[in-house]
Length: 524
Image 1 (cartoon, one colour):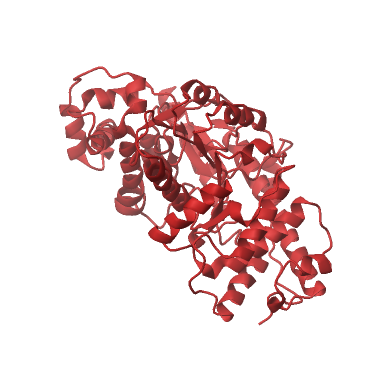
Image 2 (tube, one colour):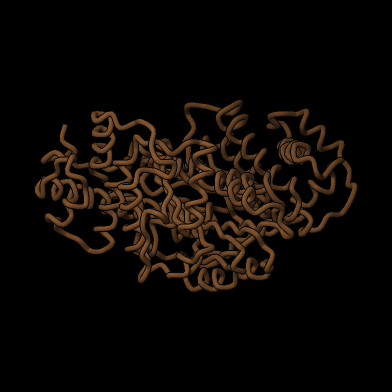
C-alpha cells in the first residue's frame, strides 16, 4: 500500500445556509461578552460550612448534590441526599482562601465530575433522545481526522509498525515536531531532544506532575493551578503536592493573569495554566503570558496546557515560551478531533526531557509506536502551512526516509488535500461557533469564546450550574456541562459545545429558547 495515493477522498464540511445566517456579521474572532468570574461565592462556602468534616470531599459532594435535589422538590432524583442536606446545619464560617487552598476542594470537584458522567449523564439520567452538547470535543463523525492522517494509520498497520520504541518516541517523529514547534516561535530552534511524545494531554500532565514532584522532593510552597481548569489535570497535581487554586477573571475573551502574579512566590514549585480556558474559550494574551513567565523564579516550573489554544487569533508566540522552566503540552484530542487516539507531545528544555526519558521508561515504557507516522506527517505538514509552503518539491520529499517511497507528485497531492481539509474544517467550526453564540445571545447571557469550540452560557434564574444542567436535561432533553465541574465557583453558567451537527445545535437551541421563555413567564 502506498502512503500517499494519487487521489484521496475529499472530506466536505458543508455549512447549512441557516448557520451562516445565524452567524450574521459578527467577527469570527471577537472574544467580547460579559465578565466571567470563578471566585468563591456564598453558595460554595455554605457546603463547606455545613459539612461535618470539611476535609471530606465525598461528604462535600453529597451535600452539593443533596442541595440540588432538595431544591428540585418533586423532581429530586435521589431524595435521601436531599434529606442529608436538610438535616445539615451551619457549623463554621470558612473563607474563600480556605476553600481555594483546601485539598478537599479539588477532590470534591473531581468527585462531582465523576458523578456527572458516571451516575447522572450516562447513568440514571441517560436517554437516547438527549441532545448532547456537553461533550467538550469535536464530533469526530462530522469533523474527523484528515484523510491523509487516516492513511498514515493504515500504512503503519501494513508495515507492522507497532513494536517497542524509544521511551520519548521515534526520533524522526520528534524531529518533525521540533521543526514544527520551532516554526511557531520566532528565533527559537528546538531539536528532537526538546520533544517527548505522549499519550495525550491528560496523561502528559499527570505523568509530568508525578515526575516533577518526585524529582524535586517536598515543596515549601503550594503549586498554583489557574482556574477555570479541567478536574483530572488539577487532581493529578493536588494528589501529589499541596495546591492552591487561583481563579482568573475573564472579560472580552481575555483572561487576566494578575491573580497568578499576586500568588507567586520565589518558592512556588509549579504553576499549571491553560492558555485558553475551558469552558469560556477566553485566552491569555501573549504579552500577559510573557509578563507571567518573566516573573517566575528560575526554580519554578510552569506547565502550559496549550490544547485549547486553537480556532482563534493567529499571533506569533513569544520566545519566552521556550524558557528553560516552561513545559508546553499539546494533544491531538481537540485540534484534530482525535481524543480516542491518545497522542500528543510535550516541548521542554533538553535536560528536563533527558530526565523524563528515565521516568517514562520506568512508569509506562513509551507512547504508542503505532501513531508515530501520523504524528510525523502531521507535524511536517503543519510546519509547511505555518511557513507558507504552497507547493512541495524534492526538499520536502527528502524530509521523509526513503523507505516511504514518496514522490513529489504523491506528496503534493497529499499536502494539498490536507491543507484543503484543514481550512474547510476550521472555517466551518468557526461558523458553527459564531452561529451558536448569536442564537444563544437572543435569550441568555453568553461569554463569546475567543478560542476552541465551547461557549459558556448563563440562563436567567439559576445560581447553581449543576442544578441548571439537571433542570435543562429534564425539561428540554438538552445536555449541558455544569461550570462547577471546571472550578467555576460562582453563578450558574453551563457550557455548550458547538462542534456538533447543525441539526442537533439548531434543535437544542430551539428547545432552550422555548424553555427560557416559559421560565421567564413563570418568574415575570
